Length: 138
Image (tube, rainbow, N blue to C red):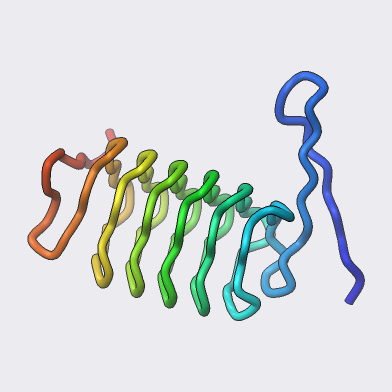
C-alpha cells in the first residue's frame, strides 16, 4: 500500500500535513501515535501528540484533538470531538455526536450515550459524573 499524505491549511498560511492510517484510512498527524490495530475512519482526524491504543475505533467525522489519549478497545462514535488533553479509558464507549472537553477524563468501562457533552476538566467515573456536570446536548 502506498503512503498517502494530505495537507490542510488550519490558519492563514499555516499548513498541517497528515498521513492516512493503514486501518481505516483516517487522517493522522505524523506527531501522533496510533496503534496499527486501531481503526480510524477515513473522515476522522487525529492531531499531534494524541495516542490511540490497540484495537480502539474512531468513527467517521470524529476529531481527536492534541495530546488526547484513547485507551485500548475504546469505541468513539461518529462526529465526536475529544478535546485537547482528554483521557478516554480502556473499553469506553462514546456515542455519536458527543463532545468531550479539554482535559476531561472518562474512566475505563464507562458508556456515554449519544449527544452527551462532558465539559472541560469534567470527570466521568463508575458512579457517574464527578466534580462537574455533563449534560445532554440540546
